[in-house]
Length: 354
Image (cartoon, rainbow, N blue to C red; front, side):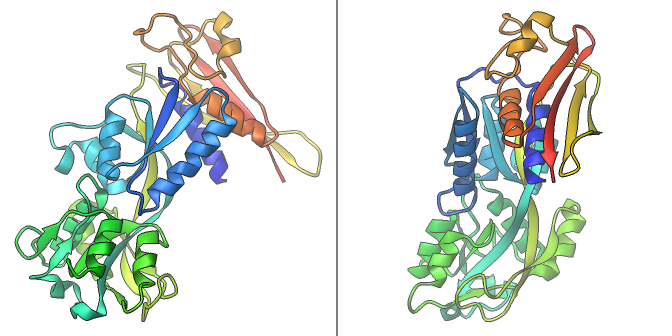
C-alpha cells in the first residue's frame, strides 16, 4: 500500500510546474536516516522515470528542507510534522514567512533520543541542568523538538544548559570524546551514529526516559507528539526499553496551485478481471484550466508544458505524471487522461492486486 500512496501523491503533485531537468530530494545529515532514504528514493526515480535525474541533497534537516521547498525550486523533501506545521502557520523558526507546503505521504515515526553515557551520571531529564548538551544542528527539527521537550521537563534551554548545535554524527563523536554530556536526536531506528557510539569499546550508553513530558508538549503545541518506546534491543548496552516521545515524518512538496478556486478529488473503482487477481482504477479529478486535446499525448513525458507561455497560469505537468506512469507500469497497470479546456481534467492509473 505504501507504493500506492506514493503513486497517488505524485498524481496530485502533477499539477505543479517544475521547469528543470533535475529534481533534488532535501534530506538531512549523513549520520541520520533521511540521507540514505533520500538516496534510495533518488535512485528509484532516476532509474524508472525516463529523462529524470533525481539527487539526494545533504541539508541541516527539516527546517532547511522546508525553506528549500518554499524557494519554488524543484524540491521534494523530508520533514517532521511539527516543523512542517510551524512553516505552514508562519510561526517559530518561520515567523513572518509562511511556507506553502503540502504533505505527500506519512513515512515513519521519528523517535526522540536523549543520549548520554553511564560515565556522566545523568539518569533523568532534570539531571541535564548545568550540563553541556547538543540540541541538534541549526536548521533541524531536532532542535525544535529538543527545545519543546526541555521546556516541558522544566528546563530552560537558553539558561539551564550549555548548548551546542551539532548534527547526530558530530554529537555522538563529541559525547564519545567527553566534549558534551548528552545530546538530543530525533530519528528512525536504528540511527547509524547512535549504533556506532553504543558499539564503542569502553562506552556504555544510557537513553533518558521522557515520555511523561508528552502531555505538556501537546498542551502547548497541539497533538503532534505521542508516547513511544525504543526497544532495549535497538542499541548495544541499553539496560531497559527507553520510554520516549515520537513524532511523524512526512514527505513534503510545494503546495502552490494554479487555480484560485475549485477542488481536487480522488476516486477508486474496481475493474472486472480474472479470478486470480483484481484490477483497480484510481482517478484524480481537478477543476483547473484543463488541457487542449493536442497536448494530451505527451503529458506523461517529463517536463512537458501544455502551453508554451512559460509564465502562464495553470500549465505544465512537471515531473508528477512521468513518475506516476513509471510506477503504475511497474505494477502491471497503465495511465491515461481526459480533459476539457476551461473545466478540468481526469488523470487515472490502474494497478493489479492479488
